[in-house]
Image (cartoon, rainbow, N blue to C red; front, top):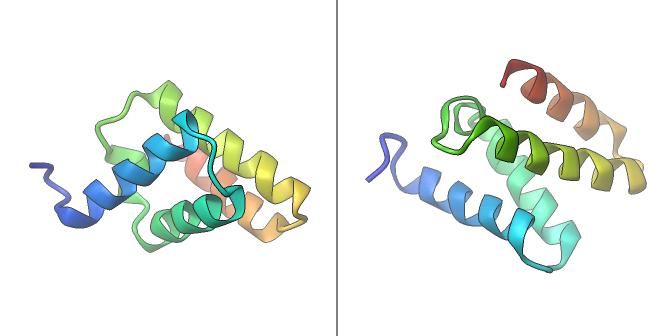
Length: 83
């Protein structure tokens, strides 16, 4: 079990979906964004390789740019810069 507990497992599941499956992007991106904002330690200290975390965040930034949710892009960029 992860040191981050059950919430971390939820985040891991969503992160896997966002980079490996075709899903409703709006729902997935919003869910992952909410998880990141609630606890940035998932992205910063999680067990995933740095390049995978950056790939997922880049994907989210691209989505939120297309949907013109620039405030989310700013927050994601801050997290990405700390990884």
